[in-house]
Length: 220
Image 1: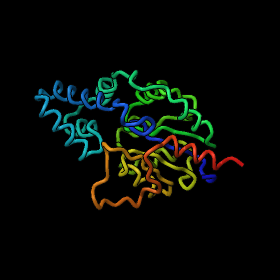
Image 2: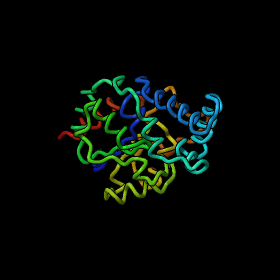
Image 3: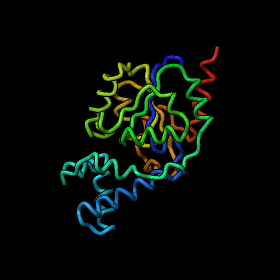
Image 4: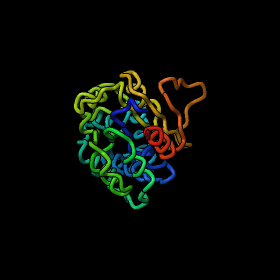
């Protein structure tokens, strides 16, 4: 991977394993927010939450377009969670430190949430920037426009960049730009039978082990 200058990481269920069960907290708070804001039963709120997620890329996008929900209130509420379920990850920190070039977090969540996660993992110092949903003008992955904004804002050369994601469809715009791509798969987000994965340059189950191997190949 000696040609890589910029390493772009999704946040939730990528920089930490899905088994940490952090994101389910966010999921529950989304349902509670929708139920309260739209005066829906919990079941109806959950159904709408998932409908908007699949149609618009994020639940927030659907709420903004269809209900004029103010995004900052939503983000503050759903990310008010217990981050102590995450443990500091010294191995991940060491692997990131050993990689040449810049590292970025690109998330459909908020910058505050990304900082809280990175702080808890003990990896904040390794990152050169966070590109969050506000920086994306609230346009979520996998819409192509924010990927282009990310590239322009941070002067990234796509052919010398690599992106890591636990949601493989979010890698399609990165691959289209010419980035290398890594799908960090897990049991909670499998591919459908026969689904096209040609946009996934690498398919892995262990991010840290893969990064350690990549870093080792950089050594003379």
